Image (cartoon, helix red, strand yellow):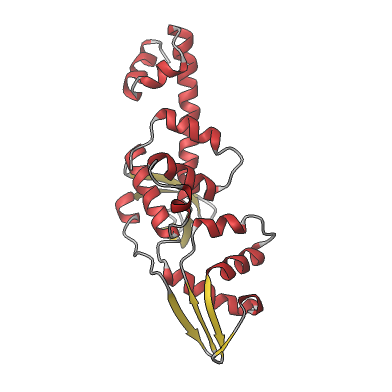
Length: 242
């Protein structure tokens, strides 16, 4: 896996316009791992997909992540400083996992990007839950009798969701946060793909401004500016007084 170049970031932001986090995640991994096919990347368990994204993010932008979260109690904004190494310390997915509650028993496989892509056409959270459950459910039994996944009641889908979470503990990165103003503690979900993409879009916007200023001052083409390292671009911009 190689870090993304400024030219990569430009190209990815263009190609990912109008798509959701799942497609964008695959575009990022595809750019960093050109030998891997789209299907191979789409079949990675979400925890492994996000670990690869975090490693790519560290190689491209550095190991520290800075974010903000709003306290649910006092509504103050809390600064969040994260270490990629800590976020990478999640368990690996298992190929299959079986879970039982009362008379219901389910066997699942981990959620993959292709499951999320299939669920993007659903209307509402409940339909999304059912679509993912039906795709990832390998088998289900009620009182040891086989059950069609489509026949599971909404409350029985809770057991499927629990099994999916246990099958891939890295699929959801929940951050334990505490408000510095009121002391309220809460958990916040870190969507690695969406967070990384937003960072790259901000970087792309900054580079567009740098290209504009340097092209106007020196007559360079876009490719000329992108070929210059970020450090040297900053030095040229300082000479221009910007």
